[in-house]
Image (spheres, rainbow, N blue to C red):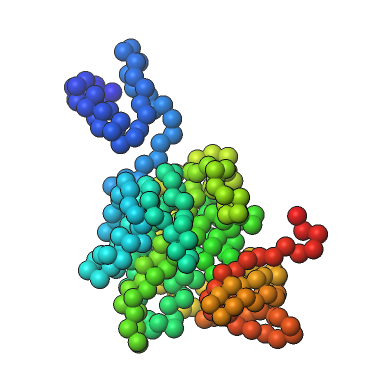
Length: 299
């Protein structure tokens, strides 16, 4: 290795030690040299940016070993940072989902927040969530051949189990959005067996029976999100979001501040509303927790 690189053995050893401090498990042998002991996939900003093919999204990319929440970090810099800034962390100590519910964020996942500054009115903000969810579904389908569906309003499922959650937080004036922070929690190389059964979670590792490259996935996600973001107002994107829905046709229960509503999810409106048939009436729901109810005889 030293000969090939044209450096001293001491220089090689120094670099190996540097890699070990970053978490790489490297075996050494006096006669044979060094060997990577097992697959390791650190969140390295330089490695991510080196293969990133976006024009603006992720060009300011900040990686942390541990944060309270990537959304909290993103919100703290949102006003001053450039459009498309990305915050990543190996772990979150206070990760959260909708309604401030705890979100387990152990090492091996992708805990990422995007700072976006679209020039849109507040009533069009849901299109951001639409664009991001389509991009995530596309990315996982393309890279791994998985059937990843979108559960209204902000989850992605594989076989009825959650693999990704999206949390969007917005700062807005009366007539326009100042910035949006979009948090993604992706169960990538995670053992979900330790999670609560009630969470009905899965991970890419569990679905594929092997670890995935988080760097490859992040690069693909950012590229897809940049593309769908520019098309967020298009009819085509809305139609794709609707096609990828796993909520349509389901019996659902919606819990919101105005109370519970149960019925059949029959359509998705272009403004992001879920249309539900309940008691022979069609009702529009713009926000709330959605539970897919099992049909009679369904396991």
